[in-house]
Length: 214
Image (tube, rainbow, N blue to C red; front, side, top):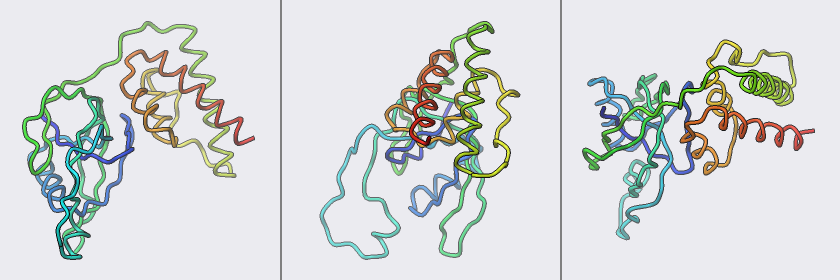
Protein backbone atom coordinates (compact mmCIF):
# COMPACT_ATOMS: atom_id res chain seq x y z
CA UNK A 1 0.00 0.00 0.00
CA UNK A 2 1.23 3.49 -0.88
CA UNK A 3 0.51 6.49 1.33
CA UNK A 4 1.59 10.12 1.05
CA UNK A 5 3.13 11.66 4.16
CA UNK A 6 2.29 15.10 5.59
CA UNK A 7 4.80 15.55 8.44
CA UNK A 8 4.20 18.07 11.24
CA UNK A 9 6.61 18.32 14.21
CA UNK A 10 5.04 17.29 17.56
CA UNK A 11 1.86 16.08 15.84
CA UNK A 12 0.22 12.70 16.49
CA UNK A 13 -3.09 11.72 14.92
CA UNK A 14 -5.33 8.75 15.70
CA UNK A 15 -7.77 6.55 13.75
CA UNK A 16 -11.28 8.00 13.90
CA UNK A 17 -10.00 11.57 14.07
CA UNK A 18 -10.76 14.25 11.47
CA UNK A 19 -7.69 16.42 10.92
CA UNK A 20 -8.06 19.91 9.43
CA UNK A 21 -5.07 21.35 7.56
CA UNK A 22 -4.15 24.68 6.03
CA UNK A 23 -1.81 23.66 3.21
CA UNK A 24 0.27 26.54 1.85
CA UNK A 25 3.62 25.02 0.84
CA UNK A 26 3.66 24.31 -2.93
CA UNK A 27 5.00 20.74 -2.69
CA UNK A 28 2.29 19.77 -0.21
CA UNK A 29 -0.42 21.45 -2.27
CA UNK A 30 0.81 19.26 -5.11
CA UNK A 31 0.69 16.23 -2.83
CA UNK A 32 -2.89 16.89 -1.72
CA UNK A 33 -4.10 17.39 -5.29
CA UNK A 34 -2.34 14.20 -6.37
CA UNK A 35 -3.95 12.26 -3.49
CA UNK A 36 -7.41 13.51 -4.44
CA UNK A 37 -6.87 12.73 -8.12
CA UNK A 38 -5.33 9.28 -7.61
CA UNK A 39 -7.25 8.21 -4.50
CA UNK A 40 -3.99 7.71 -2.62
CA UNK A 41 -4.48 7.96 1.19
CA UNK A 42 -2.51 10.46 3.21
CA UNK A 43 -0.91 10.26 6.65
CA UNK A 44 -0.62 13.25 8.97
CA UNK A 45 2.11 12.43 11.45
CA UNK A 46 4.96 13.58 13.64
CA UNK A 47 8.64 13.51 12.77
CA UNK A 48 11.69 11.79 14.20
CA UNK A 49 14.26 14.42 13.29
CA UNK A 50 15.22 17.26 11.02
CA UNK A 51 17.12 15.83 8.07
CA UNK A 52 18.25 19.03 6.42
CA UNK A 53 18.55 22.49 7.94
CA UNK A 54 17.51 25.48 5.85
CA UNK A 55 20.34 26.73 3.69
CA UNK A 56 21.53 30.19 4.54
CA UNK A 57 20.86 32.26 1.47
CA UNK A 58 18.85 35.29 0.54
CA UNK A 59 15.28 34.46 -0.36
CA UNK A 60 12.27 36.58 -1.10
CA UNK A 61 9.61 37.20 1.53
CA UNK A 62 7.07 35.44 -0.70
CA UNK A 63 9.26 32.33 -0.84
CA UNK A 64 9.80 32.38 2.91
CA UNK A 65 6.06 32.57 3.54
CA UNK A 66 5.08 29.85 1.07
CA UNK A 67 7.94 27.37 1.37
CA UNK A 68 9.08 25.17 4.24
CA UNK A 69 12.83 24.92 3.77
CA UNK A 70 13.24 21.98 6.14
CA UNK A 71 12.91 18.27 5.40
CA UNK A 72 11.73 15.95 8.17
CA UNK A 73 11.97 12.19 8.61
CA UNK A 74 8.51 10.77 9.49
CA UNK A 75 7.83 8.53 12.48
CA UNK A 76 7.57 4.77 11.74
CA UNK A 77 3.87 4.36 12.65
CA UNK A 78 1.24 6.76 11.32
CA UNK A 79 -2.50 7.25 11.00
CA UNK A 80 -3.80 7.67 7.47
CA UNK A 81 -7.02 8.19 5.57
CA UNK A 82 -8.95 9.90 2.80
CA UNK A 83 -8.18 13.47 1.79
CA UNK A 84 -10.91 16.01 1.06
CA UNK A 85 -10.29 19.56 -0.18
CA UNK A 86 -12.78 21.78 1.64
CA UNK A 87 -11.75 25.01 -0.11
CA UNK A 88 -9.14 26.22 -2.55
CA UNK A 89 -8.24 29.86 -1.87
CA UNK A 90 -7.52 32.38 -4.65
CA UNK A 91 -3.76 32.27 -3.99
CA UNK A 92 -3.65 28.47 -4.25
CA UNK A 93 -3.65 27.62 -0.55
CA UNK A 94 -5.84 24.66 0.39
CA UNK A 95 -8.13 24.02 3.34
CA UNK A 96 -8.15 20.27 3.75
CA UNK A 97 -9.72 17.58 5.93
CA UNK A 98 -8.23 14.12 6.34
CA UNK A 99 -10.43 11.38 7.76
CA UNK A 100 -8.07 9.15 9.72
CA UNK A 101 -9.19 5.57 9.18
CA UNK A 102 -6.36 3.20 10.10
CA UNK A 103 -2.80 2.90 11.38
CA UNK A 104 0.10 1.92 9.17
CA UNK A 105 3.70 0.87 9.66
CA UNK A 106 6.08 2.46 7.18
CA UNK A 107 8.14 -0.27 5.50
CA UNK A 108 10.12 1.82 3.01
CA UNK A 109 10.02 5.09 1.11
CA UNK A 110 9.14 4.88 -2.56
CA UNK A 111 10.15 8.53 -3.02
CA UNK A 112 11.23 11.45 -0.84
CA UNK A 113 11.16 14.37 -3.27
CA UNK A 114 9.31 16.63 -3.54
CA UNK A 115 7.41 14.85 -0.71
CA UNK A 116 7.40 11.45 0.94
CA UNK A 117 5.47 8.54 -0.54
CA UNK A 118 5.78 5.46 1.64
CA UNK A 119 5.22 1.76 1.16
CA UNK A 120 3.29 0.78 4.27
CA UNK A 121 1.33 -2.08 5.83
CA UNK A 122 -1.79 -1.82 7.98
CA UNK A 123 -1.03 -2.09 11.70
CA UNK A 124 -3.71 -4.00 13.59
CA UNK A 125 -4.26 -4.51 17.31
CA UNK A 126 -3.56 -7.92 18.77
CA UNK A 127 -6.73 -9.96 19.17
CA UNK A 128 -8.12 -10.10 22.68
CA UNK A 129 -11.42 -11.73 23.70
CA UNK A 130 -13.99 -9.53 25.44
CA UNK A 131 -13.40 -9.55 29.19
CA UNK A 132 -14.49 -8.03 32.48
CA UNK A 133 -11.26 -5.99 32.42
CA UNK A 134 -12.26 -4.41 29.12
CA UNK A 135 -15.78 -3.66 30.36
CA UNK A 136 -14.38 -1.96 33.48
CA UNK A 137 -11.83 0.05 31.50
CA UNK A 138 -14.49 1.19 29.02
CA UNK A 139 -16.83 2.29 31.82
CA UNK A 140 -14.08 4.17 33.70
CA UNK A 141 -12.79 5.88 30.55
CA UNK A 142 -16.29 6.89 29.47
CA UNK A 143 -17.17 8.32 32.88
CA UNK A 144 -13.94 10.29 33.30
CA UNK A 145 -13.92 11.58 29.72
CA UNK A 146 -17.53 12.74 30.08
CA UNK A 147 -16.69 14.50 33.36
CA UNK A 148 -13.72 16.27 31.77
CA UNK A 149 -15.78 17.19 28.71
CA UNK A 150 -18.42 18.95 30.80
CA UNK A 151 -15.75 20.58 32.94
CA UNK A 152 -14.14 22.13 29.86
CA UNK A 153 -17.38 22.99 28.04
CA UNK A 154 -19.13 24.18 31.22
CA UNK A 155 -22.52 23.17 29.80
CA UNK A 156 -24.67 20.11 29.12
CA UNK A 157 -23.47 19.54 25.54
CA UNK A 158 -23.18 15.81 24.85
CA UNK A 159 -19.86 14.03 24.54
CA UNK A 160 -18.99 14.19 20.82
CA UNK A 161 -18.48 10.45 20.42
CA UNK A 162 -20.78 7.80 21.97
CA UNK A 163 -18.04 5.53 23.27
CA UNK A 164 -20.46 2.71 24.05
CA UNK A 165 -21.08 2.24 20.32
CA UNK A 166 -17.39 1.69 19.50
CA UNK A 167 -15.30 -1.45 19.62
CA UNK A 168 -12.99 -1.66 22.61
CA UNK A 169 -9.95 -1.05 20.38
CA UNK A 170 -11.48 2.14 18.99
CA UNK A 171 -12.39 3.70 22.35
CA UNK A 172 -8.89 4.79 23.36
CA UNK A 173 -8.11 6.25 19.92
CA UNK A 174 -11.32 8.27 19.88
CA UNK A 175 -10.65 9.80 23.29
CA UNK A 176 -6.97 10.45 22.56
CA UNK A 177 -8.00 12.41 19.49
CA UNK A 178 -9.60 15.02 21.80
CA UNK A 179 -6.78 15.27 24.34
CA UNK A 180 -3.69 17.46 24.40
CA UNK A 181 -1.16 14.75 25.21
CA UNK A 182 2.63 14.84 25.29
CA UNK A 183 3.60 13.92 21.69
CA UNK A 184 6.13 11.29 22.77
CA UNK A 185 3.55 9.53 24.92
CA UNK A 186 0.89 9.97 22.24
CA UNK A 187 3.14 8.33 19.64
CA UNK A 188 3.84 5.40 21.98
CA UNK A 189 0.08 4.93 22.43
CA UNK A 190 -0.47 5.07 18.67
CA UNK A 191 2.09 2.29 18.23
CA UNK A 192 0.72 0.17 21.10
CA UNK A 193 -0.97 -2.97 19.73
CA UNK A 194 -2.35 -4.25 23.03
CA UNK A 195 -5.73 -2.48 23.38
CA UNK A 196 -6.07 -3.24 27.10
CA UNK A 197 -2.64 -1.79 27.88
CA UNK A 198 -3.40 1.29 25.75
CA UNK A 199 -6.75 1.80 27.51
CA UNK A 200 -5.11 1.41 30.92
CA UNK A 201 -2.54 4.11 30.14
CA UNK A 202 -5.29 6.36 28.79
CA UNK A 203 -7.24 5.92 32.02
CA UNK A 204 -4.16 7.03 34.00
CA UNK A 205 -3.93 10.13 31.77
CA UNK A 206 -7.62 10.96 32.32
CA UNK A 207 -7.27 10.52 36.09
CA UNK A 208 -4.28 12.87 36.09
CA UNK A 209 -6.15 15.49 34.05
CA UNK A 210 -9.17 15.21 36.32
CA UNK A 211 -7.01 15.71 39.42
CA UNK A 212 -5.31 18.78 37.94
CA UNK A 213 -8.67 20.26 36.86
CA UNK A 214 -10.33 19.77 40.24
